[in-house]
Amino acid sequence: RRRGPMRLILIFSMMICVSPVVFGQTMFEGYSKIFAGENHIGYVIQRYSYDKAKKQFKSIYFIRTNPKVADNTESLVAVADASFKPISYQYTSKTGATIKTIDVTFGKGQLEATVSDGKKSQKVTRAFSPGETFLSTFLGYVILQKGIKVGKRYSYKAIAEEDLSVASGSIFLKQETTYNGQKALRVLNNFKGSQFISFMTPNAEVLGTHSPAQNIRTELVKDPSQATSNMPMEVNAITTLFGEVPIGKTNPLYPKLSVTTSKETNSKDKASQGKAQ
Image 1 (cartoon, rainbow, N blue to C red):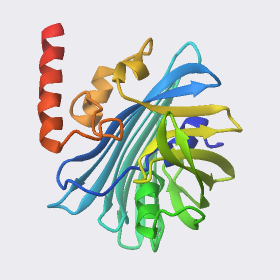
Image 2 (image 1 turned 30 degrees about the vertical axis):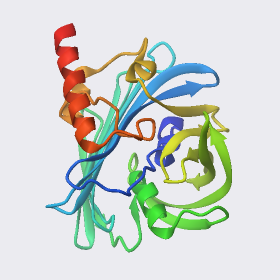
Image 3 (image 1 turned 180 degrees about the vertical axis):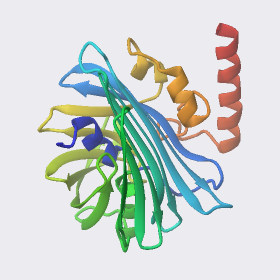
Image 4 (image 1 turned 135 degrees about the horizontal axis):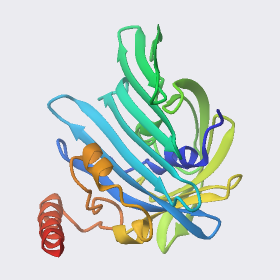
């Protein structure tokens, strides 16, 4: 099937700052609004973390759109080693009553996957030599390793998690600009035959994305309620993915929060939520 617009714009919206990295803790966590034209149609919750003991990166995201517009839910839990070689991922999508899950592990020279539609499942085993191929959710980290500088162009190969395909892509760090009052770089990304635009800070923290062909865009917001307002809040699914309902305050919109302060703020916010319930 064709790559959906939600997944398209997420590939590069997950580029976040890795310096300084707080090992063993969340490096990025935030909520973004999804727009179709000027209409707010859904939200994205994203988190990146690094396990110092295991030397593994983890990417988790959850997408929900307004059922009145498009009844879509998507989620991903992906793990890579310290050099971004794939280890495993679990991808789930639900459109109306149609469900798709892909559960993949990568071993020496091969990958093993279970693909299911909720009624029947299929086992897939095939040769796989990663080389420089990585899971598309980690694109930002890979580009950061190469260097962030206006005018730079990079080519890459990445796995499209929603269909297990390997596709070529290219990145062009086009120009400096501003986005919602913040200094940003305008970045063009082509992947799987589609182009979209990302606006990121000089530290490679994404503030927003735009897919001109689909007229779909995302925008990082400071208050989670701005993203989830009037949308279904799938608390059970979100808690299963993240281990909790994320607070969403480890991102460029909270630049002055230290890790300690973030932890204290999160604890206070959770306490407040508990009282409100």
